[in-house]
Amino acid sequence: MVQNYVRRGARGTAVVGAGLAGVTAARTLADHGLDVVVFEKSRGPGGRMARRSYGAHQFDFGAQYFTVRDPRTRERLPRWIRDGVVAEWPLRLASLRLDGQRPQGLSGLELLQPSEPRFVATPGMTALCKHVANGLELRRRRRVVGLDRTDAGWMVISEATTNGEHSTDEMRVDGPFQHLVLALPAEQAAQLLDLAPDLRSHAAAVCHQPCWAVMLGVAEPLDLPFDGAFVDAGPLRWVARDSSKPGRPSAESWVLHAGPEWSSAHFDDDPADVCRALIETFEHVAGRSTGDPGRFRDKDATELAAGRPPVAAHRWRYSMADDPLDGGSLWDEQLRLGLCGDWCAGSRVEGAFLSGLSIATAILTAVRRSDAP
Ligand SMILES: Cc1cc2nc3c(=O)[nH]c(=O)nc-3n(C[C@H](O)[C@H](O)[C@H](O)COP(=O)(O)OP(=O)(O)OC[C@H]3O[C@@H](n4cnc5c(N)ncnc54)[C@H](O)[C@@H]3O)c2cc1C
Image 1 (cartoon, helix red, strand yellow):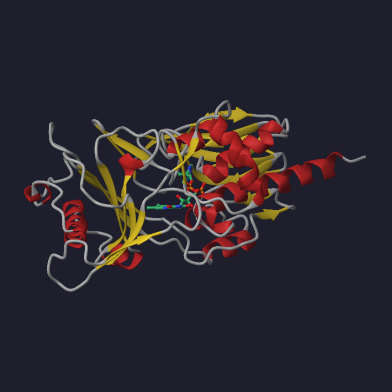
Image 2 (tube, rainbow, N blue to C red):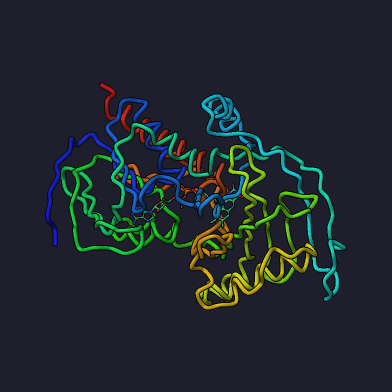
């Protein structure tokens, strides 16, 4: 049921999604004097640059780090570092593979020389999005469920959410907005694009891979010669000692990521079973015990017991795009509707940033054109 009708100036821009792409687009437009409102279904900015804390342990359970390859990101990086929200992760990198079936004590380990610097947001990956979003008008816990187009502009229909997933029936309509940007994973954008079949077909062609992530607290630091490793063993593809990142609490905290094929095949598994599969594989390839094995064998393994290091799993429906576009963003001048997100610019954190810049540039160009005498 629609309860409120909020009218805004017709020059405004609505941005749906407060991941790095959305907040970068909104920030750029706001810095150029445009009126911007951001809608986000979760309780704050960040999206897949996600952080969670359990007691003294802290985990980046989505994006692990980012690389800087484009001149526009290289230009922005010193400012982020100066502002204290980004730091280089002096990562001891390795690759780990399964070498036979027996516990192997690191016989499949190869230490790698990082080919380029890796950066992280501090004190957690979410911090960069929060920093960029600072001062923006952000409608938190609003899931956009529909869009309408009137003569005056775009109307945004949203419902309240309690934790990003479960909706209540409190609906509202905001608008009209002159411009609309969807800064969402392609699949989620496609669901909102009934009024823009061309854009919808571009979004529908891109597919994000699922990823199971396990957050593993350990009582004593693991004696391992690496802090992050690409893994080729059973379900595992990546492990990282999050507590080795700059600005993190010292409590030993590991993040384990499953590969896309395994995550897809085990998408509906019990989180306790996922914890067991990933942790047992990690212990096997690393040749180390991470604690009492009974703690993740119970059905309620992800309910965290007081006084014990945490073990928890998170299922990402969308992690990285399989076949990303490389144009930066998609903009329909006639509809004044744009799409951005990592999948529009080669995927990953840097792609999300560049995509946000790209859609903001398209809108600023359109505004200047319509303002021209
Ligand atoms: C497990 C995992 C590991 C990764 N590792 C790395 C890595 O090491 N390095 C790297 O560079 N990248 C990595 N990535 C990818 C990186 O996280 C993304 O590329 C980047 O964060 C995407 O930003 P975005 O703004 O495009 O999208 P998102 O961060 O997904 O932002 C979209 C936002 O829209 C919101 N939203 C969705 N639907 C609605 C709706 N209907 N209404 C309102 N709001 C909505 C979401 O809550 C979210 O906040 C990883 C991702 C995952 C999941």
